[in-house]
Image 1: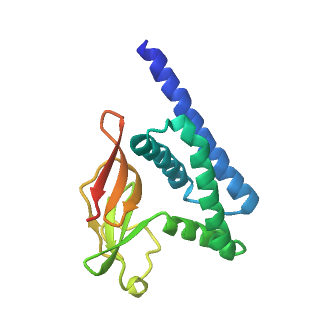
Image 2: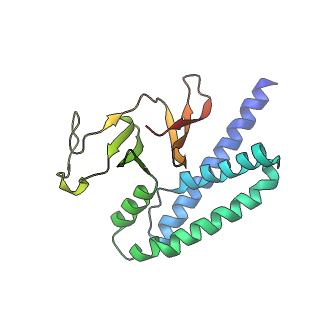
Length: 187
């Protein structure tokens, strides 16, 4: 019986990856925009369904069309309000824009910080002051270079999203392979 569950999970996860890949490929191929926010939009739609279930008691299947519609409206506003202004620019500009929109920027103690996940360095907390005063890095570096940052003690982070003004939601993969959804106070 367990093998059937594993196979079903694999098929569902494979289908999700296929949907993400098709969406990413269509947007890139048709609009020439590399949208790094696809994963965040999918996770945000999942959060909408989860919180509707947890707080309103609505079944996630009932919330799927609602979450899809809300994400469509959010994506439309983002496209019309921000991305259309750089759509004729080189592809690196749209890549940088959507990557930047996918980071968490927050203020704590009167200072601005950026919280971002990096597969080789983990979750990094960077001060967001005087960023234009640093030299650009054009090649791989062995240690810290450019903007000083603090590496947080978080491992296996797959997705990082801001929940509210003081908290972030983290989807992380445990050593066993399972996914854990937790919230943390912004550091």
